[in-house]
Amino acid sequence: MKKLFFSTIVTALLAVGTLTTSCSKSDDSSTPAKVTEIEGANYSVIACSNVNATFSIDVAGVDAQANVKEAAFMDLTDKTVKVTAQYTGTDAADYLNATQTATVQFSEKTTSTALTFTFVKKSTTTKTQAEVEANGAALSNDDKTIAIVTMSIEKGTTVTNGVTGDFSVTVYQKASSALDAADLVVNKEVTADVYTINCQPDGAIFSEPVSLNVEYGTLFAGKTVKLANGSEEVTAIVGDDGMATFKVSHFSDWRVLLNPYIKDEETSWETISTKNVNAVAGKNTISYERYVGVEHNLTGYAAMAANYVLGQYGMQLKKKVSETFSFTATRAGEVKVTVTQKKTTFTFDYQGTYFKGTLWGEVSYKVEMSGHSGGGGQ
Image (cartoon, rainbow, N blue to C red; front, side, top):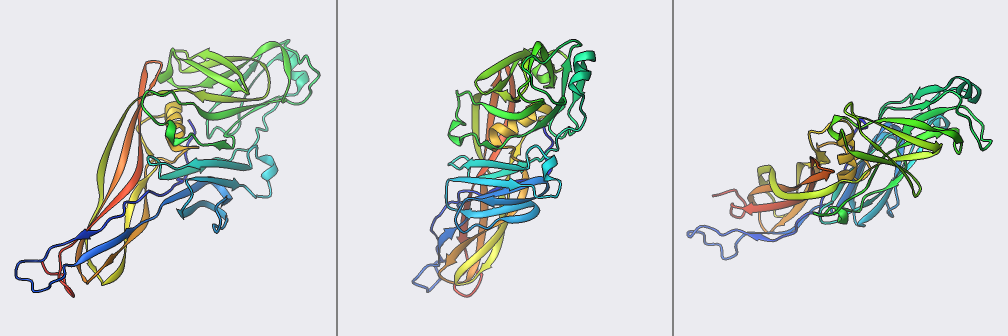
């Protein structure tokens, strides 16, 4: 699975409510203190990358953020947003995926997201066509940030359709639309494009199948896995060593897929912040830290798959980020502020092998006023 370098992140759908407090029996005030208009962000995105990039989002009024490794887009109003990451370095032409776009679909379950864009340079380890046809070859990708893939070609294998060019293999992530959050339901199979294997020379057709050796990890030993190129699919069995060997007849972009079945879903709320604050009459703004991202103890391909299925284009692992919400008090006094956050743990079944991932989501606020006008009495 790819190594996530930074975090990408987003917001939460926040609860809105009105809370009142009662005064003591000896209180002469005829009007109890009230807390009204609790307001927080709707949706937000944090986008991160392994190199400095320009991030932009197609929502009116949101500016691009240039030459940074992390950009935050907060207080979004649309449920569907498209985030574009552009690597603009002078060597951009050396990258296979210098421009990437991810579409995020927010829902009740997914109110925040953390996008991690990984930019990968094209492999420069190559062999000429003449060398390969005469001697065969075993070539691996240079940048192993995401995964290691080895291309194996038998001696005497020839290109039959006239395509020419040097041989190489690069592993990268394609610009992609996110998995619709509505698909995250029990008893449903979901499909995730985990990463892509770029094989050169593109379009070459061979006299004998070429092997693509992909590491899945021993968790998937004995499982059937597949690559896809358009509507064409190629399957293989993961060996006891965690490796799968795919036989392909031509070179192109082969997508590494995972199709887990959602076996179970468990939801709970966790208190993430409790504090006492001296509120003023009128608007008050409270800062707190919330979790974003995916939480699991997986490694390798299973971790990458969980990040993609739950995280929409590679959500970063669990991290705390700072946010604020506001409330209006009808009079000054001490208030107790409690922030809770919803987390949903999904159990995935992949051909009898189970793994879990937790998605941190919606935030809810509770404000209790205990003081009288002008003070913080009990």
